[in-house]
Amino acid sequence: MNAPLPVEVLKQHLIDPEICIRCNTCEETCPVDAITHHSNNYVVDPEICNGCMACVPPCPTGSIDNWRLVVRAEAYSVQDQLGWEELPQEKPLPVDAAAGGEGGQPMPAPQPESGLAQAPAVTAATPGAAVPPWSAAHPYVNLYTHKTPITATVVGNYRVTGADTESDIHHIVLDFGEQPFPVLEGQSIGILPPGVDALGRPHHARQYSLASPRDGERAGYNNLSLTVKRVTQDHGGAAAHGVCSNYLCDLAKNDTVQVIGPFGHTFLMPNHPQANLIMICTGTGSAPMRAMTERSRRLIGTADIGKLMLFFGARTERELPYFGPLMKLPRDFIDINLALSREPGQPKRYVQDLIRERAAHVRGLLADRNTCIYVCGLKGMEVGVLDALRDVVVQSGEDWSILHDALRREGRLHFETY
Ligand code: NAP
Image 1 (cartoon, rainbow, N blue to C red):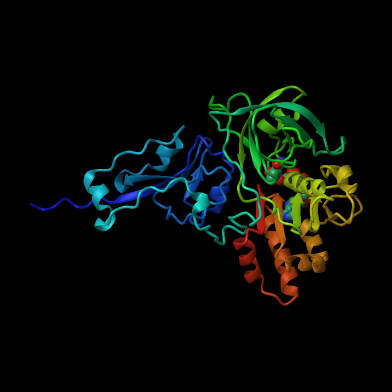
Image 2: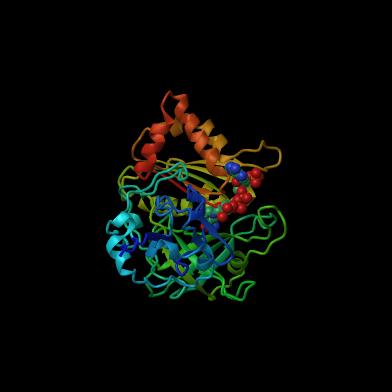
């Protein structure tokens, strides 16, 4: 009698729909376009995924780092996954598959949720680092999930852009009272807007970066702040009502909000003495820069803080969030460079233009291994900022690709763009 053919086993890559915050990072990162989504879920196509792991380190929640051993012919299809509300349980493999696996070799056991333990995959699709700077504090992530959110109370909500401008940007302060919610600058949280979507399902969480430092919007209080722009148009300029941004901007003091998170384990600031920060942001992408700047400001006089250089892009001065408080910061503490794109009577300027104008300073900081670079804001700025940094380096006869690799390997170049 012929022996049965060994059953081919696949270590199938899956995304946990209960933890995923639908931020699109994985889909953008995947070098082979194996990740797709519809209004409910982000999913991995088993026909395309090659297990390269490029998507794992950038995922802020770790929801991407799930694996199931399945018989290849019975792999969960894209259609199956799109309908999931939660991950399926691990199924026992047929005896011949578990013992034999592909080509008769024993299959490795499924790995634990292990994104952080993996060697970070640095690919052309990930212009930034997949690891934090060496001296970053250790972050907590996923303490609260869609199923177990935490309730915060609104203790402040005010507009931080000119009242007569189109950009209605709010500074919102949330207090957690006696409940633990430890955070670091550069992390984000998810807000669960009340109500249901067009299909009658509860809304998914929306992600916002912290605008306050680890010890609270008010130092020593268990609170944090967000920078939220009221969305009234889609990317194409057509009228659109942002579900969560409008909910948040309309909150009153003492209202309560459902929060999940914290998220993020790489976009973190260095903690060692004389660490320099180059911060490059547009619009509400300024939130983490405010957090890092405030953290550094609170350390003045108690620690040996390095240099801070900020490139901040906005349409006009009055549409630049936190313009007033920012301009009051001492110039020997932070080197502020504002790129205004629609200021009447002034030429249109983007952050990348100013990086080139300040080439000598930027180059000096880049030459120092204590310098970390953070880029946050519009997706479109990513390429422009990378080109500007490359030009600054190449002008001095150095090789950008060598420095770029080192910045990523050493956790010194970080992007958070949407
Ligand atoms: P915005 O007002 O639309 O734009 C800010 C500035 O960036 C404007 O001067 C704009 O110039 C300029 N800009 C446009 N394209 C650019 C490019 N390719 N390179 C460089 N600068 C460019 O910005 P926003 O509406 O506040 O958007 C901020 C972004 O940050 C959003 O995508 C948001 O999702 C993201 N973000 C927000 C948070 C948060 O916590 N709220 C956190 C992380 C990221 P123009 O005059 O040409 O428009």
